[in-house]
Structure formats: structure tokens, C-alpha cells
Image 1: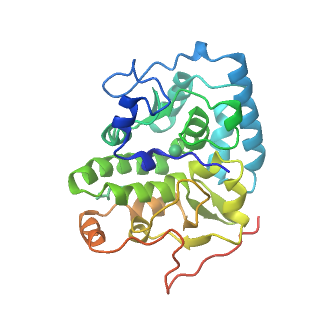
Image 2: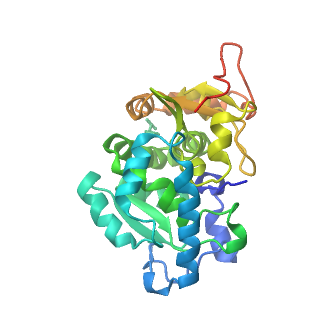
Amino acid sequence: MNTAVDQAAFFKTVEEKSESGALRGDYALADAQYVVAQNWDAYTPVQHALWRKLYARQAQLLPGRACDVFIESLNALDAADGIPQFDRTSDALFKATRWRLVAVPGLVPDQTFFEHLANRRFPVTVWLREPHEFDYIVEPDVFHDFFGHVPLLFNPVFADHLQEYGKGGLKALTLDGLQYLARLYWYTVEFGLIRSPQGLRAYGAGILSSGGEIEYCLTSPHPRRIPFDAERVMRTLYKIDSYQETYFVIDSFEQLFRDTAPDFTPIYQRLKTLEALPADTLLADEVSEGIAYI
Ligand code: PHE
Ligand code: FE
């Protein structure tokens, strides 16, 4: 079992949780944007060894399951040997797509998260899970954030999309549209599938940092795999404590960019008048792709 319960799941609650100590990170030293120093020297040899184990397990699962862009970028990151130094990756990332990484204590408030994305900064949690959380962790840690999310930021189209998502988030805050946008993030950035000439592949970070879901999402007969439709996705509830009931499939990152570009204001208005769809819905005109052979 994975999966990292992600940013989207904590929408609205992170401020209270960090103040009450319910979140794991140390928020005491964070600045106004919740940025901290990574403090790389403080990671212990045991933690670097745990990272190497996580990385090795996940890396061998990628061929035939992760999309090519992810695999190629990850290899270029050279992060197999220990917890990476964010500043080094950040420099390489800036050269590639003008994004930067910033270190954060853990989940950050919605507005802060969106502001970072809108300014091409990706927040990466500094702490690493404990050995007993090897297979399952509730909050996102440095392994999920870095391994799962950073590779695709090297892709220019995905990188532009995520910036637009950040801007869209700031806008959604003013339109009471947060829950809809959170669903979009969940079913794309975290749990998205993409078509390739060789068959379906995963690009979502929640899948790619998970030892179990990376296989399940492609080969289990249980979940639905439905062509991506932005409004349908924004209407669909999601599970945060089990594998997904439904995956939405894009043809390309260009499609993701294009289909999320229109003004969502009328969509939010419409969705407010509609019942949300359960996570395991299959509408009458939808066909699930069934098992993907890899
Ligand atoms: N087009 C969306 C809006 O008008 C913004 C957005 C872009 C949202 C990209 C998600 C992804 O609100
Ligand atoms: Fe995530």
C-alpha cells in the first residue's frame, strides 16, 4: 500500500494542523512562504541508506510502467546514491525549465502552495519517512516529493502546466472552487496515466513513488481507466487511504495543458449545482480501458 496523502487532501487544514503540532514537520524556522533551509548535512547515514533502498525499489519498477519523460529525467537527476541536495537539482532545473525547488517543513497552506507554483517554485518536504513506513506513508515526505514530482518539472509542457495550475489555484480561492481544483490535481499530477505507443504509462507522483500502486494502476482489473475530461474529473471524489478506484488517461501533456487552459469560472458555477460523483463511477457513455498489458 502507498499512498502519500497529498497536498490536495489537506486543503484548508494545514494551518491549524501545523499550529497544533498535528503535522510532522518542524514549522518553527519557516519563513513567511514556509520555506526552510534543507539542512542537508543533518541527514544521517541511516537516512541516506533508507533513501537508497526506496530509490532502488522504485527505480526497478519504472521500465514499462512510468512514462519515458519521467524515467529520462530521473536518470539525469543522479539521485540514486542518497538524499539529494535540493540546491544542486534546483540549479539544473532552472537551466532546463526555469523552475526552482524550495525546501519546506511539510504540507503548506493552500495559498502558499499555489503562490509557489505560480512563481515556478516547487516545494519539497525536507524530512524522510521512518523505516517502518517503507511501503506506506500518510503525509508526503522528501521521497514522494522529490522522486515523484521533480522529474516531470524538467518537461517544458508539464512545467508550464503546473505554473498555470498554481495561478488557477489562486483564482479558485476567490471563486470557492478549491475542492474542484484539488480533484484535478489529484487525478492528474498525483494519479494520472498517459497513453504511449507501447501502452498506458503512469505520470502521477502518487503512483510513481508507490511500491504497490505503480503495478496496480496498470494491471489490476478492478479500477476504471477513463479518458481525461477536465470537468468530469473535477466532479469526481477521490480516495486518500486506498488505491484509486478510477484513473484518468491523458494522450499527452499538451492535452493536459490545453484542456485546463479555459476559464474555469463557469465550470465551478455548474459543479456547485451538481452532486459529486463517487470515486468508482462509470457514466453511461464511458468505457473503461480495462487491463493494460505492459
Ligand atoms: N484554466 C483554469 C482557470 O481558469 C486555471 C487552471 C490552469 C487550472 C491549469 C488548472 C490547470 O481557473
Ligand atoms: Fe504529491
